[in-house]
Length: 186
View 1: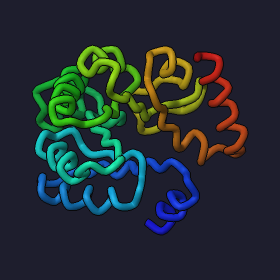
View 2 (view 1 turned 120 degrees about the vertical axis):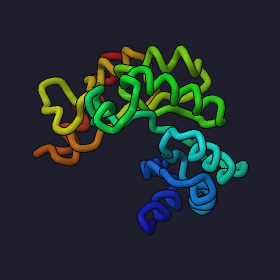
View 3 (view 1 turned 90 degrees about the vertical axis):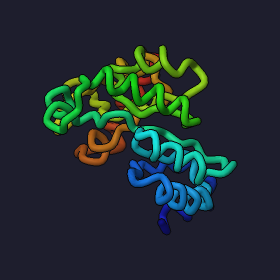
View 4 (view 1 turned 180 degrees about the horizontal axis):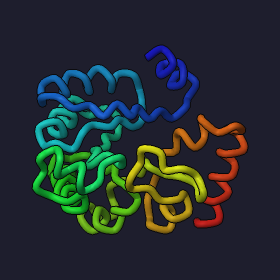
């Protein structure tokens, strides 16, 4: 957390992608502690008890809570193997509805689900999308990916791009190319 505190002290916006997932009381305590750090965004898994605990733990702090609906490394087969009776799109829709009810500020989902999520949450909640892969790059362990341009055209609010930048031979160049693609799609 030392780096987090340093970035906050420098006035940087900080997104903690911790994907908290525990019983409500534990999440309440964790979010209360994290909200004191001054971070901007925090992820929790989109289970009703977890989300209610996160909202309670925030207790008025200027912290936006994002609910992770279904990891972008999951597809319908993975959900079936885990015992879910829903396909990804239906699970994402259900969890978006539950997040809205719980008072969460935004949804984390694949950009491929932007339309169904936006139908549920309207325009007042954020849509944050991981699994972003530049055209021609390997999907790796991600199963529900879109390019930066496709995601922007789908109407997402924020993109999460990690490995295509940090594992690139030229991270600065990779980031610049992604920014160019975003600008062209905007």
